[in-house]
Image 1 (cartoon, rainbow, N blue to C red):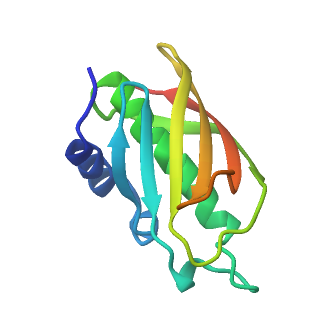
Image 2: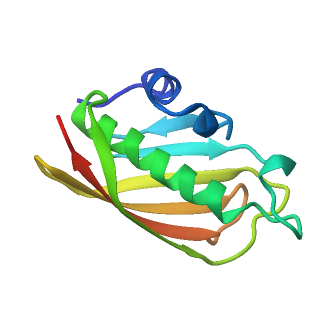
Amino acid sequence: MGLTVAEGNRILRDNFAPWVLDLGLVVSEIGDRSAVLRLPWSNRLAREGGALSGQAMAAAADTATVIAVSAARGSYGPMTTVQLSITYQRPVIGKDLLVTATLDKIGRSLAFADVTLTSEGANDPAARASTVYALLG
């Protein structure tokens, strides 16, 4: 099945709310059951103290899951977040964030993913997320 990076970016552009698009996310890689998105650093997304806000990171993890599910299904289809749990491990300051979503399981009605969020150039994650999606169509 699979998708191209260009198709992933089209899904991103055509299916997300304007405020999600304002994050500036870009699909940079797609696998059969995975996607890597880049969240460009922006002072607009920083909280007090200068670190990237947790809300931006959570939205990026959620969005990356949609692209990974679409890659596994071969196209975008209706789906919705059932669960998202995120653990923040270290601050991200002044660096782009790479958001890697990998599906653990995808069935007819549910998909489960692990998401790793890493500052560009870092070896250790800044956060890890677990997501569950309901597949509606």
